[in-house]
Length: 333
Image (cartoon, rainbow, N blue to C red; front, side):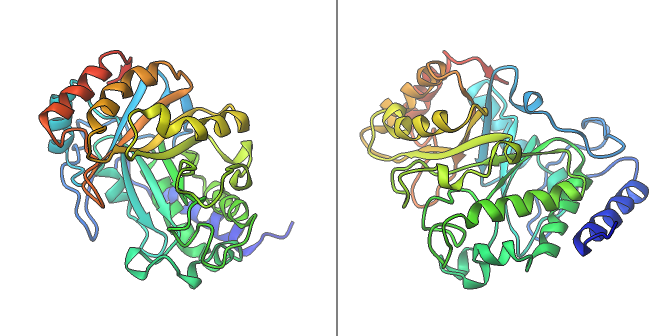
């Protein structure tokens, strides 16, 4: 049997991981240090090789509560736990394919990482990045960079979530509906990337397919971007409350499309509410709305000030409303 160059690289990497990894992995830093990682004695047991991730291990046992934070330290996560009497179990972080990520950064996350992989050179390069069109990924131009990301994931070993090319149905990223991309290319790019990780042995990764809500997106459908059941573990949805009085209004149209497409578990991968007269009511309604939609397995709150203040605690009244609503939810804390 003749092996492709990519397959030979994957096998070589797999052998290196099996024979070169130490008995335990300590936390560390890369270009942007993320302090606060638990030490080896207090952390989870380190498996001999990458775990085989199961959806129910991360999403089961109650409604998952995750967060995107400016500061991913243990102190910051503990502060949220003290606010809400619930510790977020998933922390989102972002990595461009161009710059990659280190296993030390993944080890430093005080929870389960949800790694959003962005196929671009970074935000500073703008929305139009011809070198990072979807065809470049499909053709294998960046296979070595994707393989390096896969290497970090395998070396991390523990179960984690990977969210590749989020909000692909919008026009604001180079992997979206513009930048010279053609219909059907996102599916090909997604499958190509997943195959690279699978060949590298990243059994500890669960793949989160995450379109934007259709409000504001270029496409009124999401089906054209769907990679297929065998290539997706979790469906994610990005959706922010913008001048809307309830999460029903924000999500209803998109959830109908998701439910018609697949029975995969659903995770709200970016949630937040824009400041305004409607915010308090939206926050208070969020918890009861979750209980009325049992297919939603969890949410990841965007607790960040970026192009607006999306936090749930921007005012004491909003924090109280959010906590009051969540009191009706069986949160996984």
